[in-house]
Image (cartoon, rainbow over all chains, first blue to last red; front, top):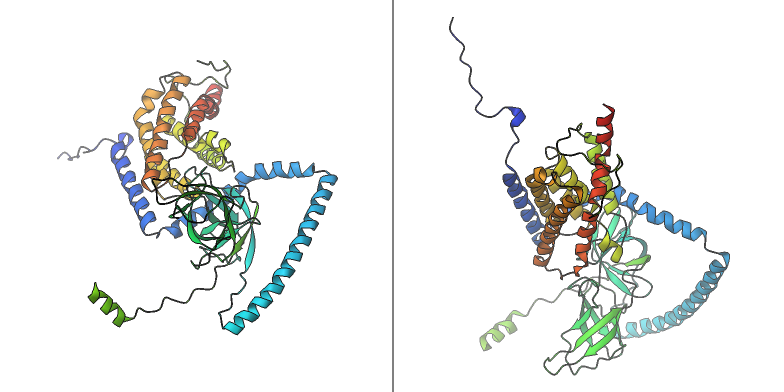
Length: 304
Length: 178
C-alpha cells in the first residue's frame, strides 16, 4: 500500500490566522485616508460619495434632533396667551412699518426704472427668495457651518446667498437631496465683496474663524472708515445680490507701522442664532469679460 | 481616586473572568446609538464639553472585541463622522484608524488596570486622536481653536468607567445566568 502524501499546511490553521498585521492595516487605511483627503481638497470629485452617505445618514441626524424639538414644543406649550398677544402686536407693527417702507421703495424703484430706461441701462431684476429652516449648526469646532432643511423639489443651487432678516448669513456650499449646507461669513478666509454704505468704498470682508470678528483687509490707514459704518454687498462678484447688509464696523485701529488699518466688523445677521433664513437666487450672470484686444496687448508687451 | 458602587451593575469583569461573547447586534446597536448621540444639536460650550461617545464606544469594543472591531471598522466610522460634520474626507477616518490601531496594540495591557487607570489610558488615546485631527485641520488651513476642545476628551475619559460597566452589563448578566 502506497502511502498517501499529505501536505503539511504551510500557514497556521484558520483559527490563528488574523490576516495582515495591525501595522500593515494601519498603513493601508492611513494611505487611503491621505489620498481621500488630497482628492477631496484638490479635485472635489468625491461629492457624489459624500452625498450618498449623507443622505443615508440623514434620518439618524433627524432622530438626534428629536429631543431638542420635543423640549422646544414643551416650552412653547407654556407660552402664555399674553406673550402670544404681545408678539402678535409687535409683529403687526413691524409688518406695517415694512409695508410702508416697501411702498416707498416701490415708488422709488419705478422712478429708477424709468430713469434707467431713459439711460438704456440693463435692468436689474428682483431676486427670488426661498424660505428655509435652519435645522442645526455645524458641530465641527474648526469650521463655521449651518444646515438647512430642504424639500426634494426646492431648486437650491450651490453658491446662492443666504440671508436672515438682519443681513447676510453666508453662502450655500453643498446641496444634498434633503438638506443643504451653509458656510457662514465667519468661516476662516471666507471673503465677501462689500461696500461701505456711507462712502460707497469697495473692500473685501474676510471671516476669521470661530469666536473672532471678520475683518476688512487691505484698507489703507487713511481711508474714510469709521466705527459704526454699515457694510453692504457690492454685487461686483456675481454671487451676492447687491445691497444686502453684511456687517457693521466694530473697531478701527490705525497703527503707524502698517499701511493698512485693522478693521473688525460685527456681522449684522444672527450668525449662530437664526431660525428661518432666505436663500436668494444668484443674480443674473454678468456679461463675460470682453476678449482682449490682441493688437493693443502686443504693443503693450513690446513696450515692456 | 473614586470608587464605583459595589453593585453588579458597576462591577466589571477581571481579565481572568471568562464572559460569553457579546452579541454582534449589541455591538452594532451601541455603536449606532453612540453615533446618534454625537449628532445631538449642541453648540458652544456644551458642544466642547460633550464626550465623543462614538470614539468612546468604538474604543471600548476595539479593546474588548479586537477581533470584530479593528482598524478597518474604526476607519469606516471615522469616514461617517467626516460626512456628518461636512469636513474634509478622511481626516477623522485617519484619526479613528490610529485609535483602532492603538486599541489593538494596548488591549491586553489596558484591561489589567482598574477602571480609573483605564480611563487615563483612554484619555491619552483620545487626545492622540484629537491631535491627529488638529494637525490635519491646521495643515488644511483652519485656525487654531481654543484649548476648550480637549475638554471633550477629558469628559470622555471621565465617563469611561460608566460606559464600560454599561456595555459589559449584558455579558455579565448572561454569564451569571449560565
